[in-house]
Image (cartoon, rainbow, N blue to C red; front, top):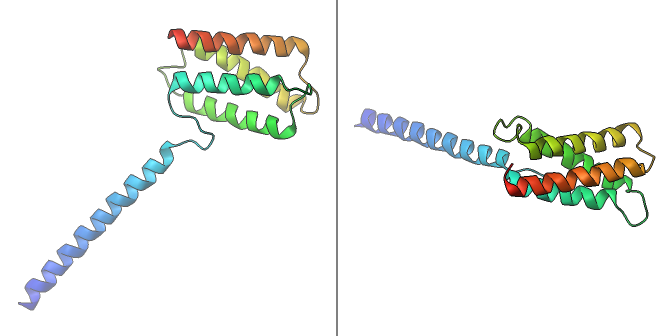
Length: 141
């Protein structure tokens, strides 16, 4: 009788541990799905939102983005690129190529000329590329 109870107890413990492992994996993997910057995982929505955010960052009222705005922009650029560059379904699209060009240019400026405002020609090019990326992603390419 006691042997049967011990065997049943061991099976119950094993089943409980398996259930605990499954629950931990489900919660652990679901926590990896979200992005801290607020990117949704929808390529179209994220491209439009990143483009709008960066357009507002490169055109501040006082003429130069604050260091906090620059840091937020760099984080957003890194998050966007790390999410979509490895994705073969989007990294060949014209909208992604245009967006990546704009993001690389802005990131390079923030890295190399951190204390200087954006030159007017770079700002104009970024505005043009970000608007173009918005339009092409909404059209579906």
